[in-house]
Length: 288
Image (cartoon, rainbow, N blue to C red):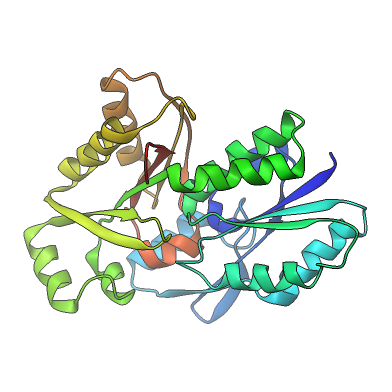
């Protein structure tokens, strides 16, 4: 391959998929109970089920963005191999990692190798879906410029729909007020959230009850999916596999020509902010 794709662990892709597509990881980090760990896709430094167990029993987790040096080091390794580099970055609307990537990429502007950067404006398996589809283009033999253009084309068509089970995690992140979180918990309110065109997470609507929230996610797919771009659908979950299967089954009932290719855990970097029980659905759409 003539160029390398660098991506982040915020994609929540399975390690096997990243290996099959020959992707190079630049991991983010998270801290829990005073210890900091790299967020690898295979969770080699911290078991993912243990992570969610700790959250459920009251532990708090924080996350650390990728710094400029870490990006420069990753880019330099590929430059030394004579490779061009395409960076697919975590949404600038959710993390400062994109700005680190931008500064790092700019430091190689005089290099003989190309270093191109895409702000995916995506997160979790939404970012993962963009990386996956982009990597398939490289596998077909497209040039770095063609793949770069394709990735940018996908950005406004990559739909993210989320619901969370515990509003207190949104309160900690400033998404809802403490009062709203308490009242919403009492009334069993489940927010329906969306990543907007700026790559920021916003609350779009609210439902009463978990099952209705999951059915609402499926209805969002039915309303806006564009299978002419891709039929691939990804689902990620905050240690709630049974509910992920329920959502999958609701989508299949729609009778659409789609391929639910990956169902995977939301990793610690995203899960620290969304909490246990989060359910997220990703697909290519007429608009985000």
